[in-house]
Amino acid sequence: MDLARGLDTLLVTAAVAALAPLLVALLPGPRIPQVVVLLAGGVLIGPEVLGWADRAEIDLLVNVGLGFLFLLAGYELDPHLFEERAGRLAIAGWLITLALATALVGVLAAAGFVHAFVPVALGLTTTAFGTLLPVLHDNDMLHGRFGRYLLAAGAVGELFPIFAIALFLGANSKFVALASLAAVGVLAVVLSFAPRWIRGRRLERIVREGEGSTSQTTVRLTVLLLLLLLVVAEEFGLDVVLGAFLAGTVLRRWAPGDVHALEGKLDAIGYGFFIPLFFVASGMTLDVRSIAGAPGRLTIFFVLLLVIRGVPSLFLYRRDLPVVRRVQMMFLTATALPLLVALAEIGLRNGTMLRENAAAMVGAGALSVLVYPMIAVAIERRRRAAARPAVVPPADPPPHAE
Image 1: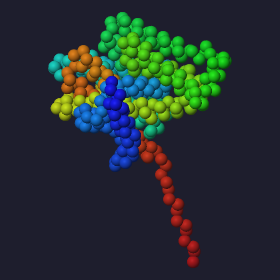
Image 2: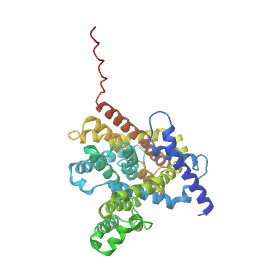
Image 3: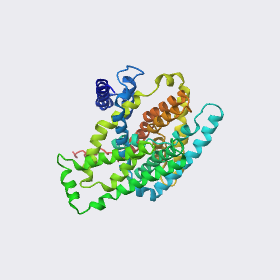
Image 4: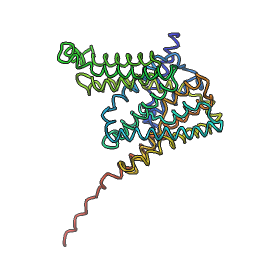
């Protein structure tokens, strides 16, 4: 990699990341998710338009950004959630989605519209949980009963497709893939119990004393944990997203010292630099010409995301959530992007996916990030406005008797 070209790409990418929140605040009309501006900025500076930046020059940093995105998603997830009804419904919902995807993509494959049956079907079962997190945080939508159902559905929609990708699309045999998944899972469990081995010892005291100083021990250990599980997942032929997600769930258990302060530091590192870098770089890889040449394909995948991944929420949660919340859940769970990018790359690499379908899937994911969360947020704002008590103006004082 040429250092000068890498720095040029990094500079332009950082400029897009820095300007994105300003543009979101200045644009008229309803506020759009910042992720959309980052993706659009990536398209603009990428090889398809201005040609100012090339993702290959900063690919290592982009992968770390992807890792941070899913580390924070894993950190948000409480594993005990899967023992509750929210977790069980989320798993049932994903299985229903998988069955629908298998049936509908099978029809498309029989019609010759789709060649890569497995990656397309799996793509339609995903939820961009990590991508949604900034939007959900900004609009305070992760609290209460609805937040727990949403967290469970998002986590399952992110994690289960990763397992399926490792099993059905990995380079290894299915037996080796299962063994790899088990090995990475065991490593995550072992790491989650690591703090018990040092509790009450001098090492724990050193870690706690250094977390607020220039040593920043907890941050350094967290980054080490993330990179360790990323490297292990890569060595086992698994998606790096799996390693990052597991790192987040492990971190939730073993984070020493001031957990809230650590979370703030990780948000600053992730959302301040690495995560926007990933989204801008994702925009650089969008094949705009293929999308423009076959807009019908993009529209079909965009609608299928809602029908297959979103619509089951309307029926699945009918006893648990009111209609307004179920409609929000429908749009939020139908939002997909990072795994669609990965699946498109896999399909193109092994030659089973049509180039126009790969571009249309990624384009549909980008459009879903633009449209579906905005609808859910607009519903949330209207719901809150309707829930506010009406302000009754004070009555005029009675006239003085003459």
